[in-house]
Length: 217
Length: 209
Ligand SMILES: [Zn+2]
Image 1 (cartoon, rainbow over the protein chains, first blue to last red):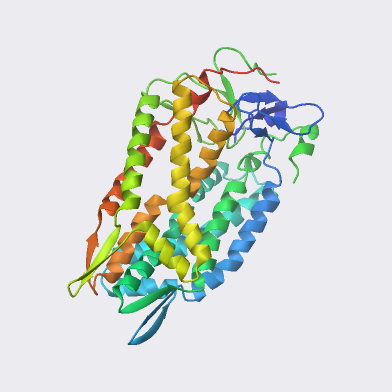
Image 2 (image 1 turned 180 degrees about the vertical axis):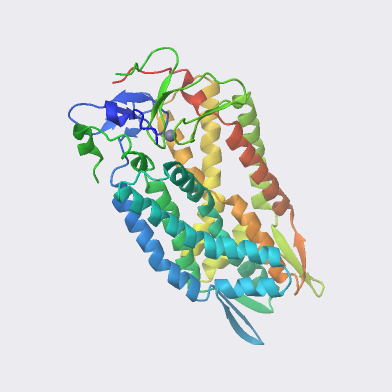
């Protein structure tokens, strides 16, 4: 892996908003970008601890999100509770297997893979691993991109609740899993946003000892 | 010590791996990637300002259409039921799922509106070569809102819910459904034509403070 010179290793700060480079002041402290006035940090403050906390919270919520009913349908025939998985099974049995796959992938696999990917990124930064950095950079971009699609089931419920309600024969209500599910999506999105990918590359171009003071969590 | 504020070639640090590198001069429609981690550093879409302004205006119109008209409906025994986006959010709210309703409202109505409006203001300021106070903050807000607007996920959600209802009733795709579909295309196009580097070009490079 090519080492190269990073902004931090020569005492420069790069603005995340406008890309302007500025010199790191000697005393440390709060700096703002001279061009766009955004706050400047060599590395995102407390990136690792924040990302850890959000990822662990998402892992906790993943269980109720998948085990509790996400939708409760009641009619004069009785009431039926659906979890995310039973919703997928329903779509599969009713013959729309492409949509069943989409929902399964977006609602079950994406959050799970995203949590695993975040754990992998966090652990490899902590081990100061220099292994497969380009692949990890790609993984980071991927989880930033796909996370939003997990909101799918929430929107499905919103439309169903409204349509079935006004039609009058049955009622559909959002189950307790809806909130935990939305929580998983939001927490993993926040975790991906708070992770600073530059930390992955620091083991190959270590910042000087003086600069490292500013980057610690 | 690298040369920081020379005229050319401009020096930058990759936002994903912090590697210092010089930016090449881009021709139209070219983009520059980080030599180490392959992150996109700079793009140069053609006629960025004109195209983005036109797309933002189109998106605003489509957004209005998508919110004022019925999204989807079902027809059953001669009875026709249609819902609008705000009607759906309201139904969820009245059900006691205020948190979920609030989230849906934020991700498909509030955040997209704010992002469009602020992007419009930024584009107007750039056109007027005016740099009002808070220009930088406005751009930071637009950027931080971007991941939270989820109109395209809503569209897929509508399709899934209609498939679920298709065995009970015949489904109707409303005007807002098609407006939402068009809105997604326009938003994606505007994200491609928008060149953030335009916002700072009048200011030029500032020497390191
Ligand atoms: Zn890079």
